[in-house]
Image (tube, rainbow, N blue to C red; front, side):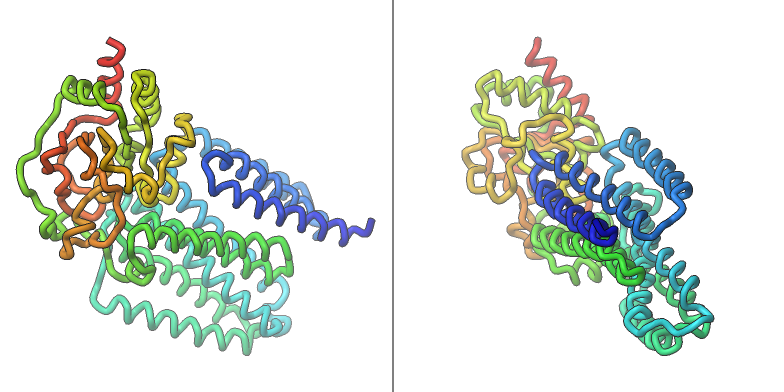
Length: 462
């Protein structure tokens, strides 16, 4: 068989495996298998690309061994609470890889020799600019998610004007580069510097509450940068893989924005979630909290016919997912109907809660999406909120002055009884007080979520 035909056939098989893997990733029940299929497809694509280019395999194998070792260590050692920032780093490295690939291709083929074809010069610019802004923006996102820098938005007067000027400058430099790409690397280096600066300025105005959207958007950027790099080196599989990542990232970004009832422009430019002292509006304290002891919560759960657990980032921080699953199994053995209500933006990255609970072997059919459980919330005897805040705040429904007004929430306030597990009365990412905590049907169960649930398990076993 002709070698080129075999290589292109391998690319087609890889593409099919990518698409199939992405499809399977949409369900927790098939996500592991989908991830494996996609990984095998990528390995096949890499092997085909190496054969087609005739590259010295020693360095490639060394790079694969080092990278694979780092990836294996990260998968084993990085805690689930740190998964969002690890995803941010991976997005950033994807952008950096596209930038470096384009830079190498330009330096090796076109700089000082001849002008690149107009289309090649154009995709070089796209790969460098999108890759650069993805890298620096992802590093800022990593810093915010890991709390190495403050998660609040950094805003300054004329910020939008500065960003607009950067984009205009980029277009001008791009045109000059396309017209004279072989003369030197001055325009090229300047484009890289501007891209890195723009990435920082694009992410620093965004608050912690919008990080799930930012993660999805940066993921899309990394795919688009890879797609542009594929055009630079004339590699079909890189074009296809980059386009798939870019498109899926944009779709996920749209889903996240819809889940928050916000436009993408609002997320990028509003500075939402700026401080912990945001105006509370009508969602401020409207009564007294009613603390509950471990024994109180035990008796409430023991008598319940139906229980809905509502996980949030606090569950991830406490690493309490295994204890929640064990408590759920005990309740089921006691004749209780158990469900887990999942909000699309609970946690700090898309699908965070699904992954966390799947890791604890919570049955997939018990993971209920927000739109499915809300119509039946009034029939739930007990809603157990574990570390969630903004995604259950009724101010989103009835307080037009609230910064989260209009955001769809899990309407636990309509359940017969609400048990809220929290360390303290501190607000969530949006920085506003939660009126749910003062409702007549709400009891506050203070303490570390893992220790609190372990105590409940002991009560049932005792």
